[in-house]
Image (tube, rainbow, N blue to C red; front, top):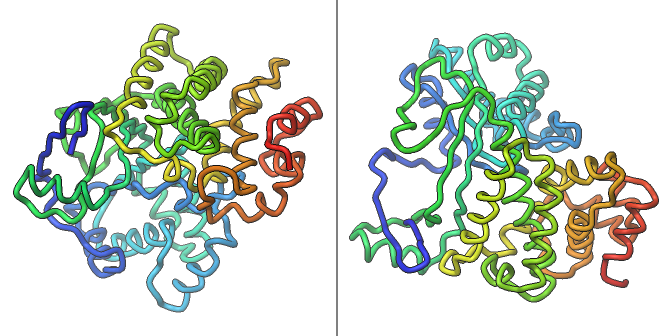
Length: 372
């Protein structure tokens, strides 16, 4: 259901033939084993990849799933389920396949490969060579705002289509999908729907992660602290809008695209963020900040510090997130926040967990957080 500034337009996606419950492990194994299955796409959120700070598998978070697999129980985590499906594919001679992650991770193809191979090395090491020889990992950048579906959305979709869909997808009119990689078993003609295939996704990935996603994090923490509940409310606040522009000025230095293209994207983002009919809640965006801040904000902070600058826009995001850890603004919903919450009263320690430090940065963030 495409939600424009004035009206909704609904379309039933005929390519979706069937849906299965997440715990239907037999259906998962059957589909992964089938030679006709050419690729698997993933949209599971950043946290579901179980990445440690260095990018590899967080073995502590994966330990229960590794143990479950070793005793013959179904795998439950994303790396575990991928491994289980690929083990079935090897067993039944399903042949090569592509894994296509669509989440907001830098170089998400390589990121997925790393956690999968790390998990497999622990749970089924004999499968590792087969994965290396038969599985490709495609890097992608997906840019489309999709707020969480509400009961009212379900009713609207039914009224527009005459079809009783329990899980309609609501999205903005803007859409962009950029992919780079190999599809050894073939792929759909996604370019017919506007997808772009490129040799290097990095520039488009950085543009989205830093400008859209980083901007979202700024509004989620700083905007919710000012009492706003949606992106549209926050971007309509003159103060939040100025903060957003300041962050974009800093982040744009790390987007390897022509200035005119970056300026056009920023202008488009303001229009997209201001679409009040897209009720994209700040609480939804604020979730799992411990996974998002390191990839959306920290690279800009490091780059600015190396250049001898203390970035006020990035500092505001860090400070607002620390306030969020202390209970200010949107409710805390972050399975990985424990170590940060335990240190939330000490800015230096929180920054240390992010791999950041230095007296100038610590002092600037301390001045920006709400007084304790």
